[in-house]
Length: 259
Image 1 (cartoon, rainbow, N blue to C red):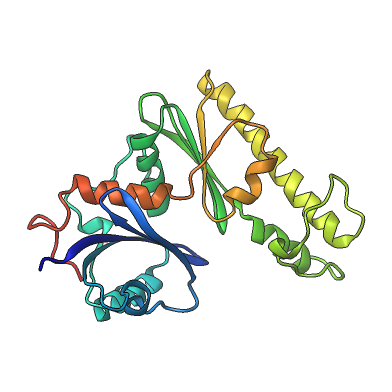
Image 2 (image 1 turned 135 degrees about the horizontal axis):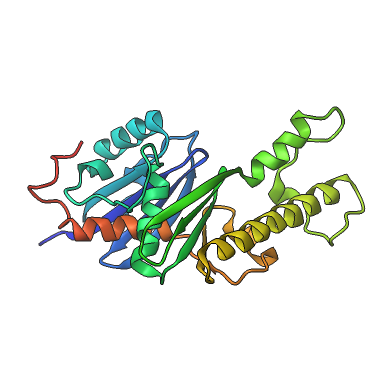
């Protein structure tokens, strides 16, 4: 009996490890893990009595954690590849040396799934804003502190303001009535008004209205407040990894042997 073939895509960020399992182009499972606990993939992926052949493709901006995840995959008998192992690597015209692997994949993925010009906003530990013009060329980007950094900076830079978790603060009105609500209102409206202002400037620079795609862990928190029309695609990087894997012919002799 042949084994069912699945692809595990893994996006290792500063705070979380985002995972999706694909059978062909269909997501069969999606799970996020805190990166302070290395996952035991054999317990997460294998149901009792089920047999799969699973390969994994990894995107990472945390090198030391990448090694631990690869080790965990190996113990679970899952063959893993890094993006650099693929014969066909994501590349964006105009990209600069040192561009983060996650940003490169998210822009490349946007090229596959969305019309140009396109602005990709990844709301994670940091917020990255990347612009791809109508010719598919990288025009440049921005890096901004993420939502959790905004919250922490208030506590760390003041004597009396508490350190809070954004998700634990109840969403209120424009103007807060207590300290927690004031912090939440300042982030909700201050952050998105900054983003809307940046998007106005980008639109003026491009000379046309771009497609705006939000992704990352905080994308759905910010989305309701953003004035610009946009799409939320929290699978953008994981879909891009799957597409890269498919276009590279999957696991073949042109790929490295993996780890």
